[in-house]
Length: 292
Image 1 (cartoon, rainbow, N blue to C red):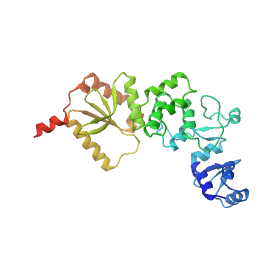
Image 2 (image 1 turned 45 degrees about the horizontal axis):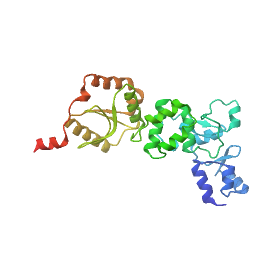
Image 3 (image 1 turned 90 degrees about the vertical axis):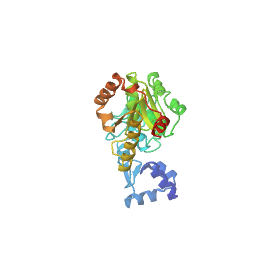
Image 4 (image 1 turned 180 degrees about the horizontal axis):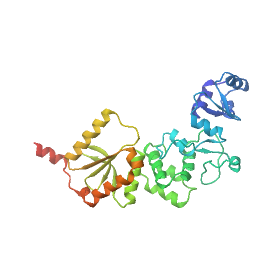
């Protein structure tokens, strides 16, 4: 047996692999029985085995008769995915769809064979198109584009079986978006007819997430966890420099974007109604000249 190949197969499946995969990697039935007896592997479904360190969601998906896919698989592929991670998204072979299980994820078009315990990025994405709303689809695609996991032409291929309405969402994607909450903020403001620029470089300040008009900067935290003390200090120093130049800075947390958007939107719209976003700003060169 080529133990390296078996280890690689198990690693690729986040600790879960089929007997077919293990056999192709060089494992014999005797070695499989020994591994099970020694608790190095355990059977989670007929023909599928897991290590003691296997990912819990992957084990759950395989135990339920399918493989991990859709939003759950995208998260393991390190794609920014909206919503809770508590639900395990599973998709199964065509025969399983004829059973009593009603929670399998589906893609546009025919179901595919199970090749691994977790779907590759493209297969997971195709299944996510049916589980996400329009905003969620754009958020996920922004993350994929930003990390250069796929390019726009690749996404176009994956969307071909989807309805025209879904395919048109690619026109709203932005590869510059640094987080899902940034994407959400951009999309929600644009849906109100507000012009928003992404990842704007401001001399003396640096790159900011979003700019509305000439003088309203919106910075968006990408995750629910707090940043380090060092990053906190850097962010506030950037805010101070921006204010010094005449900008208004709104810094939004993950929680505010995801759970308190109505209040956030009211604040932004109030600033826009008062034309605060159109106030003139000072060029950095002018500020330096005045100081001297």
